[in-house]
Length: 247
Ligand SMILES: NC(=O)c1ccc[n+]([C@@H]2O[C@H](COP(=O)([O-])OP(=O)(O)OC[C@H]3O[C@@H](n4cnc5c(N)ncnc54)[C@H](OP(=O)(O)O)[C@@H]3O)[C@@H](O)[C@H]2O)c1
Image 1 (cartoon, rainbow, N blue to C red):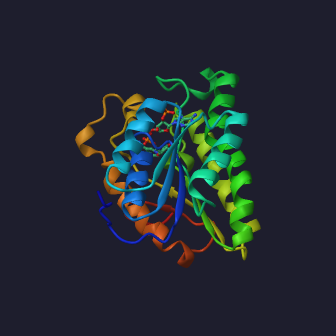
Image 2: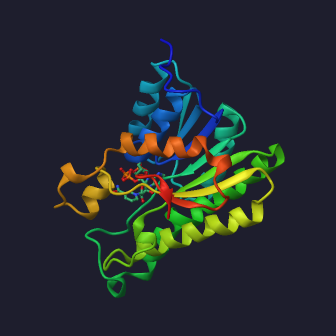
């Protein structure tokens, strides 16, 4: 069966972390339906393979890499397998993320080891992956690295400490990378997707009115519009997905 095309993507290949559900799955689906060869990453192989198999049935080229982005050795495997199965990566989306222990707790009640684990998943692991992929992008003179951020990166919400700190650091990591890569053809952008009806949201705020939350598919569509225009956006920009505006 031929893939149904939403539009022709500006990206030939994309590596998306956290692609088995929520926003990452929606982004992988949306890119695949535009003709991008996609490689999805998540820890739960069964859920990820189910997502990838469904895309393949539509004629899309999709691959699964089961790995933990916080695992130093696994990051090398992610980059190596992605390049081998899909070719040089044009678009790297750092979407996988953890809140840390839930229920969320005050920062002073947070174990240092828990903060460390959150930073490994949300900051250090993505940085390792960027280090492995950005060089090839710079050599080819093109590529986009997108960090999925959060409003917790800019607002100080009590009990969101470990996650907030990691997202704020990730935002600034993106800005510094963008400044250093300026002129190389590599864009580094950040986007706050807004509140979405996903497992992460349910774990953080189990009593939230789910009807008031955005659908990941809708947010992914907005992010794809932004990505198609990445070359027009100042490098290092952090935006909000909905509505799409500079933050
Ligand atoms: N939901 C919201 O309201 C909201 C608001 C603002 C920002 N965000 C951001 O949006 C992004 C997507 O969130 P979401 O709500 O879609 O989350 P989600 O539904 O919980 O999905 C998270 C995805 O990441 C994967 N993942 C988690 N830890 C991983 C790890 N260590 N290594 C590899 N994969 C990992 C999960 O699969 P496995 O568990 O199988 O690994 C899953 O595929 C995150 O960056 C989040 O911070 C979300």
